[in-house]
Amino acid sequence: MLSTGLYLNLVLNGLSMGMLYFLLCSGFSLVFGFLRVLNFAHGSLIMWGAYLGVFLAATLSSFSGGIVLTAITIGVFAVSIEYFLIRRLYGNELFQLLLTFGLIFILDQIIKLIWGPAVTPIQPPRYLQGSLMIFGEPFTIYRLFIIAMGTIICLSIYLVFNKTKLGLIIRAGIESREMVRALGIDINRIFTLVCGIGGVLAGIAGFVLGYFSGLSPEMGINQIINILVIVVIGGLGSFTGTAVAAIIVGLTESFVGFYMPEFAVVGIFIVMFVVLSIKPSGLFGEV
Amino acid sequence: MNILEMHDVHTHVMAFHILEGVNLAVRQGRLSILLGRNGAGKTTTMKTIMGLHPCTSGKILFKDMPIQHMHDFQIPRLGISLVPEERYVFSNLTVDENLRLAVRKGKRVRQDRMEYILDIFPPMKRLFKKKGKDLSGGEKQMVAVARALVNGDELLIIDEPTKGLAPIMVESLRVALARIKRSATILLVEQNFDFSTSIGDDYFIMENGKIVRTGNVEELRSNSAIQSRYLGV
Image (tube, rainbow over all chains, first blue to last red; front, side, top):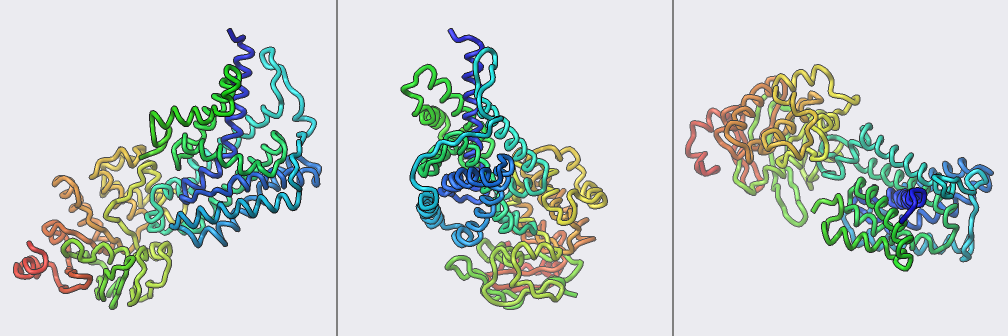
């Protein structure tokens, strides 16, 4: 029988992983939902966010300054990718796939050239190290930070989606780009902006991930698999679905890891199997 | 004075040559109807005017200004609104959001425009919080037309508004369009002959991607030979 403290610890643990997954998936899901572009290079943008973030935070001697500058830099980089490359390939899914897949190799190799192939553990700043006792069980402060970051980003996206004209255009554009254009809205500019927001989210996610799991030139390709699975569980194109799926996967991994540690690695795939067996279009997906 | 003119407009959609030299002139302050059998090119004509299917050659003038090379999003800003055949009321947006989305200046529908819309469509009052997906066909059509009215545009292009509507909704739409035409020019594409000729002033008949007849609606109503030859009425 689990004690309440341990049970809550598992829930918090799952929630922190869920929030981390949400951060990793949010940009990808947003870009796919609006632009219908499966950006396989999103994992590489996350990795760039991690490496660049650690570098910038160290250079500026500021954790918060590092995260802001990383988010902006990766955002601008994502805008350039959309403007110079993806824009030419709208409507051609195969070429988009080849392009973003090719970008993975280029971006990953540049990381190796600059920072080398070694795996590097990274310590968060002192005030985010160590753990707190919550209901008699220790819980790492950095995981609480992840929950806080995930909540802030989730709320920000909710507010942008539901309280601004941009959010209105994005939600409408997900349904029909042609009608949005017919209303006099320059959707190409919105495409670029959404890609930029996706990049900002990738930058933040990478920064948070870098201080959580360390730096590795394989982290991008590893994350894109998790991202794809979570987005499919949530329902392709549904941002709410992505958020809910990320939390479910995080909680499942936490509990499966505790009760059946040998299945911890496949927890995410168990969730996918169960969800798709019941609803093939994903939790919030529309057939 | 003509508010819209098309001169020898050709449009290709993928490999298909749909418009084969369309010529028409819509007079300001009139309700012009574009008639023709299925596949004649009526919807393509609408989309070509709006820049959604850019024309491959020819000239389109809006208030004497060439618009054929403009981007699709620039054309509505000139004061042209489209009510498409599919209505396209965004299903995950509320009616209020559908209207706000169309506002080009400011964040909300201007008070006087909203009063005008509610005056024409009183049932709209109870729909604001409803999502597009929860509306009936008639309600969707009402919202689609209302959305085209939020900016007070000079030209409304309305494509097949009665399609799939119950007779009672068709009648209320007829009344609404008869009122709207007092303050805007309307180009109406319609298959329903009785509906369109009951409110129309001028007509164009399309066949095989060309305008083959044009004139006054009164003349068309009294000429059964034309009706039978071109429209199968």
